[in-house]
Length: 292
Image (tube, rainbow, N blue to C red; front, side, top):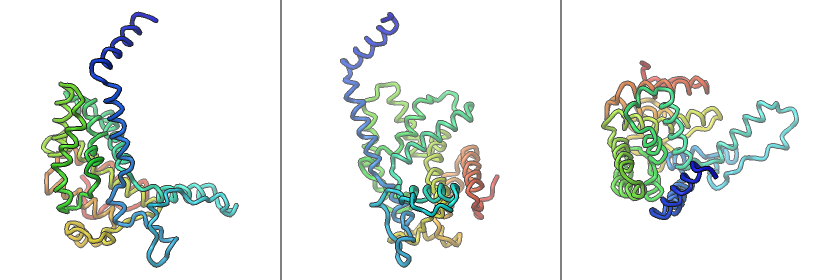
């Protein structure tokens, strides 16, 4: 064993003994894994997971049935392309979205943005940004996921979620502990460029996922919620559809331009990314959203 390897080994051993790091890592892993059991409620309550084929009158809730149809017995004349589309459609339909799925995608998208536009993040701790993006919903392992639809329930969870976030990060030593909490507060408050950037990635992920659903003719409708929120109805009536993709995009446009007035650079990144998605799946851009 070389001296360099020995020094690294002894450093880890010392830190483990002094700070009980293995246990902290294990506790962290378990808490994060808990997100995998939190179904994203917005998709569920708007009947995105209703299989019309199984029940033509009322639809069939497939949340308890997460496996794809077995299509191995489909007629041989079905093309590989059709078979692949059908398989992906059924898998998508039978995989209720967890908070863990969402969190992983947000972290991935945030990292891609940092790679794509490195000059935007000079002076920040990129490790801390990635950590906050990955764990931005960690409080939902405690308070559970409540859709951001203007309901009182979503606002009331804020204090409990903040306590859960503080507890989750408590084992991280300073100065990184302070930096991460500061970035997380910026994300929640949306009062800085960085906070708006992370919040933007969080919000566009839900809409992007709905756009991906539409590729397989899977759609939700806010009028299937029981009951729809006042905010849902307001936006749906304004744009003339209850389709979740459009209603949630209108909510995002309102957040960007009316409620908060986001940094134009943040909006530009979101707008172009979502537009690329609509082109990819062949659905029209939102009529209410003039592109810059």
